[in-house]
Amino acid sequence: MEQNLQKILFTSLNHQSGLPQPVSSQQDDQSSIQFQLVWKNGIAFTAKGWPHFGWFYVEKDKQIVSSAFDYRKIDGKTLSVMQHMIDEIEAGKYNHKKTPKDKIRDIVQSRQLAPCMNNTKWAALIGEISKIEALPIKYKRLTEDTEPTDFWTIDGDEFFGSMESALIEWLKISCVIEKSEYHGQLIPHKISEVNVRAEIESILKRYSINYEYDEIDNSLLVHGYR
Image (cartoon, rainbow, N blue to C red; front, side, top):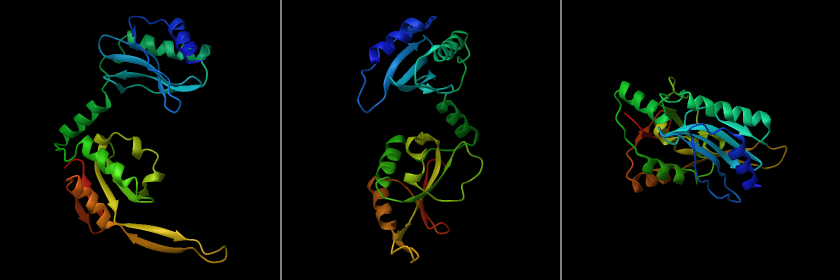
């Protein structure tokens, strides 16, 4: 099925001046690139996913710079949308399109911010705190004008784990986790608080991450930029 899909895309689409690239092998539990055309200026048309479901989009310097469309089958309508995107690349639509990294750099420069973290430290920190069940967090992205008011649990935030860490302006990690205990249908749940400040501070110190204590929110504040 995978080879058939690749063959359909290869033979059904007009590549224009895009160069077909070798594709990765399909994994049982992971998506892989099914089809890719790359232009000399580093712009690419990519179809990624599984044979029965996936996405296609335009990349620049390996960063998505277009809308991402999903497919569940390769029919005439899907091929038409794919071909339109390829034609747009050929016409130069994405030549001067800014990548997410370009936009982040522009914001940092315009606000005269200095980075306080790097991808390695963010990955280590997020990986460690994600292991703590129901840990409340609050964060502000560089692209947001207003500050968030509420805490949200990591497992309840569908965007946090996959978000580009360079977007995080600051992250607050709550020092307290509320746990609900069930004692029967007719008895109200008992709410207890577990203090995890020492555990979080131990993680921050282990990876040499600077932080502050926010007394108002009872949280530990990590700056991505200042």
